[in-house]
Structure formats: C-alpha cells, structure tokens
Amino acid sequence: MPATVSGIVAYPVTPFSGDGAKIDVAALHILIDRMIDAGVDAIAPLGSTGESAYLDDDEWTLVASESIGHTAGRVPTVVGVSELTTAGTVKRARIAESCGASAIMVLPISYWKLSERELRQHFTAVAESVGIPVMVYNNPGTTGIDMSPEFLVGLVDAVDNITMIKESTGDIGRMHRIVELGGGGVPFFNGSNPLARSAFQAGAAGWCTAAPCLVPEQIVQFWKLLRANEIDRADELFTRLEPLLRLLVSRGLPATVKAGLRGLGFEAGDPRLPMLPLETDVAEELEILVAAVRD
Image 1 (cartoon, rainbow, N blue to C red):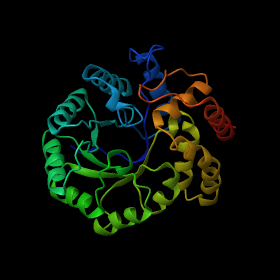
Image 2: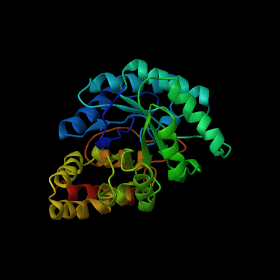
Image 3: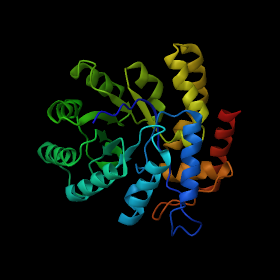
C-alpha cells in the first residue's frame, strides 16, 4: 500500500476542445509531460484545478485513466475523487485504484454542513473501499466545511490508509498544530500557494499547486534550493514567484491557469460554465507576471 508522495505535487487543468464539448486528451498528455520533464514530484489530476466537479462520470473516468496511464509510473499520481455522496466518492476511489493511482485525495463536498461524526464516517468508508493511501483535504474556502487539526490528525491515527493531510486554509498556525499533534510524523501538504515558503519551514512534506502548469521549472527549482539549504536563493526566487502565485488564486484556478496557458501559446480551452474566462486586462496582467518569472 505505501506510496511515497512529497515535494512538488502538480495539478494539471483538464483541457477542453474549442467548443468545450470534449476532453482534449492530447493536450492533457503534453501538459503532464511538461511538468514531469521539469522535475515535479507527483501529478494530481482531478482536483479543483482540473474541474472535477464540472465533469460527467465518463469524462472524469477518461481524465483519471489517461492521466494515470500517461504518467506511467514516472512519478506518483494522486487522484481527486471527491463527489457529493459517499457512494459516488467510493465509486471514483475504486476507479482511480483500478487505473493504477498511487493515492487518492478526498475533499468533503456537501450541500448540508456536515458534522464531525458524518465526516468521520464519510472518510472512513472511502478509505476502507480501497487499498491505496488517502490524502484528506481541508479547504473551507471552497467547501464551507472546516476540519480542525485535531480532527484531521485523529483520522490519520484511526484509519490505516488515511496517511496524509492537505491543508489549504492559509493558516500557518494549523500546520504547526498538525506537527505538534502528530509528533512530526504526519505528512501534511500545503495547498495555499502564497504560503509555500512558510509551509516548508513549518515541516510540510510537499506543496500541492497548479503553478507548474505555467512555470514548472521555477517551482521545481524553488523546492530544490530549499532542500539544498540555499535559503537566500530560495527566498529570492519565491519573491519573484509570489505576485504570480497570488494572482493565480485570486480567481478560480481553472480560469487563471487556462488564461496563463493561452498566453504561453498553449490552448486548453475555457473553463466550464458557470465559470468564465478571465477578463482581458487580468489575463494581460497574468501574462506579464508569467513572463517575469520565466525570464
């Protein structure tokens, strides 16, 4: 069961055809290759960046199978399997496992605000349905459900294959609390782009980010500098990256990343309605920031 995931966990967008009706599988393959060739440590399809919530079942399965198959074991794959119901999430978890995913990521999605008792049952049922590691994902900004460090570490302690936490509140204090509660032994991942430098300093096992879609070499280089303890150079690079990282998360990631890709001459289509493409002035600002980092 063990799957070692750490470092830069890269989130590809799901490319669509020009009319938005189909998945552009060839573009997805190119995007994955670019990120792996740049040195990312894992590929994580079908998260929020991959518009998982906007795909039908057949599309979701196609993206999962093509992403895992094309990655072909070059790096681990962490597949987002979140769905509105426990049954739907279990179904997706089993599909991801059958396609060869290294691990799955589960974000609680619900119309109603769920209690800790309900969340515990949901995560346990999903984890017990598969034999691969599970990353529990906390992002109250998108779900309206906020899980405390105590609850998250408790899940890792209680369920064998819940082994990782993704924390995306942007609260560095929560990361320190995870370290404290887990005795430094619970791998946690930062999902807040502007917090990456502080999160690694707090002991994060990795950074879950869509930024490698646009500037993969620079994101990987930042991580390499940190590992080499070249802190001043890492800080200098992160200072260059930070304006871009902040703009990326200022809007929905599918819209910002796809606009950034278009500015680089790579067409991944528009985000699915009701999301809209970036306004022209924001897209132009994004293009300038990407160029500044790449230069």
